[in-house]
Image (cartoon, rainbow, N blue to C red; front, side):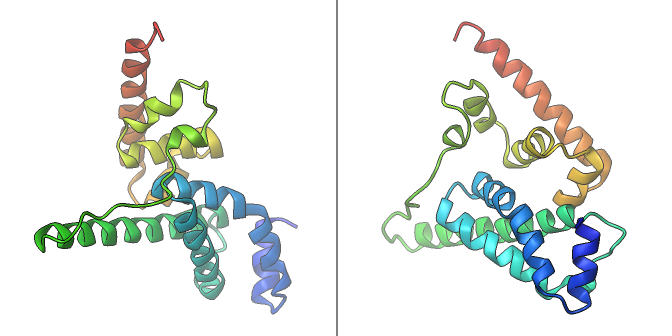
Length: 179
């Protein structure tokens, strides 16, 4: 059963059909959220929230669009909300002179990639938006149009983001040729 059929079945009352979508995308959404947040536990929570949100909003889903991209856009928005809250909370702690706020259980991107892979440390040097765009293209095979949908920006912005990220990667790999 493809995504469109599963969505149609779910909207017709067969909620087991949504389980097919969860099984299909759960690992990818978890990895996606983990890369953005850097915390596996937060990523699990966001992944679950994204699926719940998708399920509850399924009637609003445009069947002419990609379910995968819609789901990634939901997960991305939820991750950005977490990052915003963390930033606000961090500012609050600094301004109120409370003890430093530290995240526990952070995972580094290089742990998500092969340890011998030179790309892990290089990707860490990109901006969050550039890293997400590159990983969506590399890992998920997303087109610039799909990346734009997920990041909620124009296609030309997605193209420029990818272009800049790839130029930075080339430059950084050039600097690390002797490694």
